[in-house]
Image 1: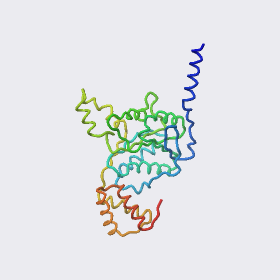
Image 2: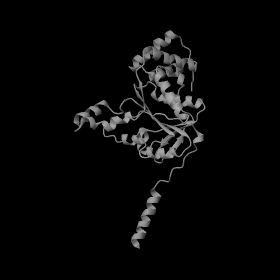
Image 3: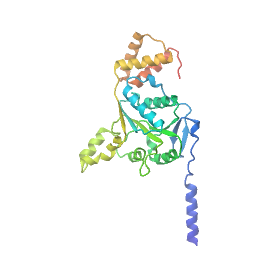
Image 4: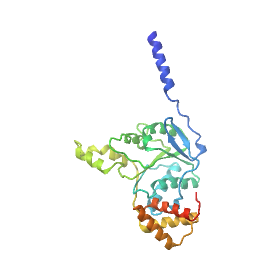
Length: 281
């Protein structure tokens, strides 16, 4: 009898400690959400930080492919998970957000949910929440990669394959990464050289990227593309500058950064707009 009472008290204590099931938010209050843990919650984002799709220069093929895939999904058709990989600052995450905005502009009610890499272990709980909704969701993880002894990659399989339940039909997953195989090259070579069976040593981790139906590569831009990006920003936001001055300043700016990319182009434009007294939003 005493043992039974003790077990009952323990059960009651565990019940109090366990988090209450998360109620689904009102998805109609926003088109974008950020997933947080401890406690689990979906935070609405009233205004997404993004640029217009037309301002993304030099990524035409990736733009068209990702937009077509996303439109398919938003219309209730089948679509692939997508991995956008390659050079830093070339608009990978900007493209995902711009494509989402373009789909909304077409009148399709697609929601985007941002998931941080460090929160991947909680993705099962997030998918369970999204699965029960009538909405369709673009689950987005920016700057996804895995380092030595990083076990988070196992959680990613729940997003890509969905385990025994399968990935929810109303969820598609887009990720950006600087690495094609989501892990450092030296990590791949080390495991190949030290494994008992070199071909199997990295198969589990490298195969993660194979689970993405779309691989979209991003490469360093040319100088002409770099200058075209800046001219596009100037025209869109009403910053007046002649071509000769823009070219000279922009090339000097890239030289001081030691790099040429869409991010560097935007940083130069931000400086230029400030000097010219033009506020943009």
